[in-house]
Every structure is written in structure tokens, then in C-alpha cells.
Length: 256
Length: 256
Image (cartoon, rainbow over all chains, first blue to last red):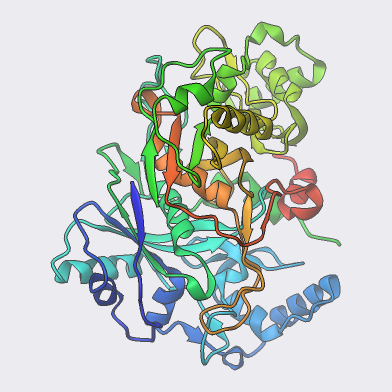
């Protein structure tokens, strides 16, 4: 397996055609996987916003006040409002906001970026990253690139372990996971519960090559990796019923 | 960046020298990262056990009964006892056991494997995976392989997202994470909180190449990837104070 950054992509602006820009800068073969950072997908889709776009609700003001009290850091209630509008469920409201976005991803501040947005205050996550991946894939097909997979990625933190790692937000041309259940192990016994989250692993691998900051690149090509013909699933985001941690968080409140 | 499986490793037995076996099957250069699955590290270290090694405590019987009632699946109380003995904290006791192992890793059943253990009932995780990684690295050095990093990996599930992905349990010759804080972004602004868990991302990448089951290989070499000279940290496992999910789980009990 080989990973290669797509070099020299320009600063992405609303309306840019990412498939075009990527296809111009690399040669893609059937079976390749292209990862694209959600930041540039959002920029191409015009998902920038300003704090003044978010008239503050009572709930947003409450949250901002609570976080302010707990952390001594001032939280802009307009930002809390933006997070609420991007979310379907609030898992933690203080000392930071952990929410479920409209497409099922759980992340701090609904994944809204405040550090990477020339000319605006906020960069929201793509509205439907799966659709974004499909569009980029279709764009590549129009340019004669067949049978590649596209993954829209993000980096985020997680419980239990420090640090951020690359994760998938949306994907096309690939299953989210590979199901090894029923396969024999090295001794011929059936493997236990083993569903491998390949889109997340690919996103993490790509993040090693993409880098952050000024020297980073938002797109990476994974070559010579075969998904194989094992059954996969397209479920990536757990529902509450399927996630004891979410159930625990529903019943819990931070008290300092 | 390139990932290459180490092929044709034999079935590993207690006392085997993994550094030797790996060095015989691949050529390593300074800067390479070698990932080794914890299963073979455990086997080499003789971390097999049998259910009869675990006389059942009252707590283990309680847990087995509770899980049995909740899941209609019979839980061997000796297995619950083994999990307790490998753990320092029980985060969830039912409908499954989620614990913190003695070296800080949080996983279901303390990572004890029941599917991959010829001649025994159980395969425990390495006692100190960081030390295991150091030993393998020292063994490679003795064979003239300098300046490689070694990561002992596992696969495990996580909250919020389905499926398992590769994670690091122990590492040597590399920092756990790369700290991008203070680096400028593409617009020259300072990046926000961005600590990248490189050992986990490398473990996930390697897992894509390692595969599971009969065709899998437990060792992978990552080449042409530079950790760079950015400051890193060796913290990977969150403490309770630093993990709201762990705090929430402490106060929560599953009630069906």
C-alpha cells in the first residue's frame, strides 16, 4: 500500500471543482482511494459562515454562560448557536460542546472550524459528506477516472485516548467497513466479532501524509490497497441504542 | 509513505525472538516503523492462560450472572475473573465488560482474546506493551538495525463509531503524538488544539495491510514516512480527570 499527497492544490474557494483540481495533479488508477479533507470540501461548497449569522437563542446563551463559568474562557453565544444549528443532539453541553451532527458524526463543536477560514468567522462541516464524496467521485468519472473510491475526512479527538486522528465523514465507491465475521483464523477457527472500519483506517493513514498547517495538503491518494471481495457494511455512525457511552452521557451532567 | 506486510512469519510460540524473525524477513532502514500485533507479542511472551487458572471471586460471579441475565448469553465467571485480574478499573460491567488494563488501555474484556490461542483458552495482552516494543527495538538494534520505531498494536472498537480500527498499545523510538500547536495554518494564523496521535494512525494504517484471519500477517513495515522534528508527547491514554466520558461512565449503570 502506498500513500501519496496530492501536491500544489491552490487555496480552495466556493464553487471550485475539487475533482478537476485533483485529477489535474495526480494520475489515478482503478482501485485507488482518494481522501479529501472536509475543510476543502466545505470551502468548495461555500460552507463558510459568520458569527453574526446566528441570532442567539436562550439555550445558546445558557450554554455559553455555563461554559464561561466552568472554564473561565469566554464562549461566544453566537458560536454556541451555530453549533446547536448544526446538531441534532447535544451529548455534552459543558465544559465543551460535544454534539451529533445532522449526518450522524459526533464531534466537539459540531466540527465547526474557526482557524482556517479566510474572510469568514466559521467553516461548517459539509452538509452531507457522503453526497460530497459521491459528487467528487462522479466528477472524477466525468474526467475518465473510473472505479476509484473517495473519502471525505476530518480529524477529531476521542474518549479514552489523547490526540486527534483522521476519521471518515463520508465515502463513495467503498464500503465503510469490512466484515471478517465467519472467516477462519490461523487455526481454522471462526473469527469473533471483527468488523474493520476501513474508511476510518484509510482516513487515519492519509492524515499521516496530509499533515496540518502551512505545509499540509488536503488530498491524498492511497494506491495498491485492495478492499477485496469480503462483505462490507455502510454503517459507520452508532445510534444511541447501539452505544452505551451515548446512553451514559444522556444521563450525565458535568458538575466541575 | 509505503506499507509492506512482513510475510511468512511462522506461528509464534513462547520464547520466540520477534526481532529475529522480523529482521530475517525484511530489510529495515533508519526511520522505518515496524508494527507488531499484540497477539504475537503475547504469544512470544507466553501470555497464554486457561480458564481454570482463575478461581472465581464473588465479584466475578456477580458480573457473569448480570451479563447472563441481560444478554441471554452465558458468561463464564472464570473469564470475568480473568478480565478483573488484568484490569485496574471497571468502566462498564454489563452488558459487556469494558475495563482499563494495567497499562492504561481501555478495551472490552481487557483485550483478552479467546479466538487465536492454540492449546490454551485465553491470550492476555502483553503485560507492558511499551516494554515489549522496547525489547523488540533493542533486538533489532542488536542485529544492526538502527533508528527504527516499533509499535505494538491491537484492534479495538470505540464509542460513537461502528467497527474496529488499529490502535497502539506500546511504542518505542517514536513519540505517541505530534504536537502542531503553535504552527501556522495556511493563512499564517496559529493552529488551534491539534495534537495528532501518530502511533494510533500508524497502527490503523498498518491494520489495512495486516488483514485478519488465516491470510493475515502480524507485522507491517511503514517506510518513507517522516515523523519530523516537531515536538511530540508520550501521553496516549487519558486519565479519568482528563476524560469526561470516563467520568460519565463512573456514575452510570446499564439497566437493560
